[in-house]
Image 1 (spheres, rainbow, N blue to C red):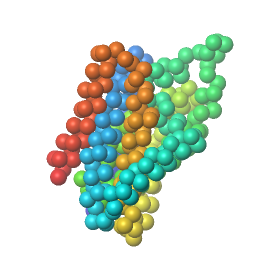
Image 2: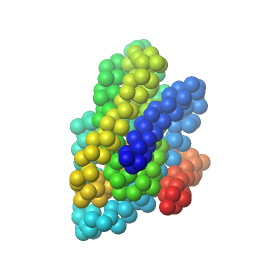
Image 3: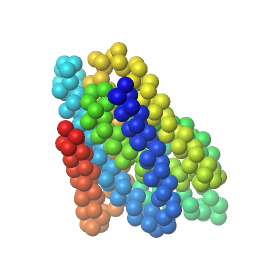
Image 4: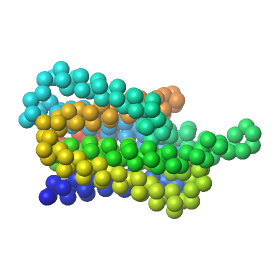
Length: 268
């Protein structure tokens, strides 16, 4: 029962905390958000990669369920392909495509006809549905990590929270641009974040009888983190090529990795 409390608590952390932090960024001026979001993205990249290579994959390899290393490699490749296909089917892309600050101001600018971007007026419901599915999957990954090791679960939840914050900020802007009030956008984002808890609870009761699947789910979780970091977040950083900005990116990515390393080492 204690494990279930850990899972519920950190599922809420991964979902609700990111929503609340992201909503607080809306209180900042657009100029300050423009500066802050790329820094958050860089840190999130480090956290995702650190959780993947320092936590999830090592635990999958060292699992009590003996897995051939070739199966781990194959599962990782299939996971990357899976998330690529999901993104192609528009079940994943919109959850990550508005991280970089260059997207956020754009949403508030009029187009060349003098009006706003009409395509965003109908984006609200799609954002909410997509985020709920995304959060549901995150909940499954958090539970799989906790059922392997409580410390790994904490690290996984923290990595998810780190990359959810810039995503939620972008989604807030889209919802506001779609005609949602601030309170309504916050309400629906909180509601969507509860998908993390739903996914976590479902996984908890299903995976109890399927312990042999845990290492594979950890590898799929790692492939998800790696894909988001490499395919969705890193390309946005390449739009900023000034030496000072590049140095900042490297430092913040390293800090994200160090944060996961220290957290994982300290908990152990």
